[in-house]
Amino acid sequence: MTRAWLLPILLLLCGSAVATGLILRGSPGTAAATLLVLLALAAVNSPLIFPRSISAREAQERSAADGRPVVLWRPGCTYCLRLRIRLGRDARRLHWVNIWRDPEGAATVRAANDGNETVPTVVASGRAHTNPDPTWVREQLTSSR
Image (cartoon, rainbow, N blue to C red):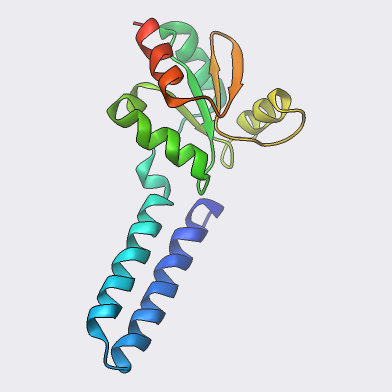
């Protein structure tokens, strides 16, 4: 099991335990609501909500070929989630690199952020931008067409 799945699994287990306790106390409605909230949190924090990650090297090659930005991210990052949600369907057009799975991607992030693994870091036109506004990222996508 990788670190990416640790938080979602913990949320599922805690949700199940809390819901079981609430059911045993005679509150099935509260149990169902609590379980749904924790299931939603687990889904949002899972790697499933993000497009398939590729290696940093492959992302750089693809970006050089098509001009689309590269997003360096990690699961559980609220700012990465914000970027993903605000981009909507356009997010699938970007090249996503999970820095927890790709040491080269993590090194790129550290180089761009004074040794810190601050994500999301978006590389567009060879320049790294830390936690950019989703509107700006969308503009970079439209200019790469």
